[in-house]
Length: 157
Ligand SMILES: *[C@@H]1O[C@H](CO)[C@@H](O)[C@H](O)[C@H]1NC(C)=O
Ligand SMILES: *[C@@H]1O[C@H](CO)[C@@H](O)[C@H](O)[C@H]1NC(C)=O
Image 1: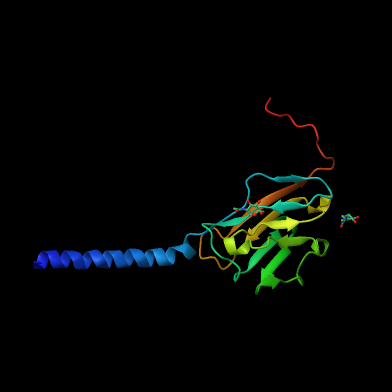
Image 2: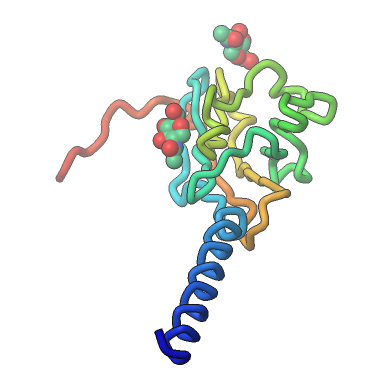
């Protein structure tokens, strides 16, 4: 192998190493928190899931996940911290009615389940992963609680 060839292979492996390092680092940097552009519609008494996830998938079991109400002074609906729910700052009307999905956090699925929704639950919800190293650490989902269930929908007209 001559000198030029040798230099070439050295810089190639340096390049490869750089790429490998970039790959090892990007998973944390390139995440996005994605909610739902469409509102979730429910009737009083329904159980709903407010969709929100981290994309690409990353295990967020060890991270803090906050669900709050931007239209109610950012008060907490569900606060997950130190691997469990912290209820001390939660809006009282949500006591015992919220849950993150089982095994969801491991897959970056931070959707929130709310049982027995009422008219007061209607509004905007924000899902937020503060420790994510990304530009988009939060997203929002709107919940509409319709007073009466609409049974008449218009299918493909
Ligand atoms: C998160 O989990 C919910 C409930 O299982 C499911 O409906 C939703 O599609 C999941 N989201 C993603 C992005 O996998
Ligand atoms: C659902 O909420 C309504 C109104 O707050 C309450 O009267 C009812 O007992 C609740 N149902 C369940 C199954 O918790």
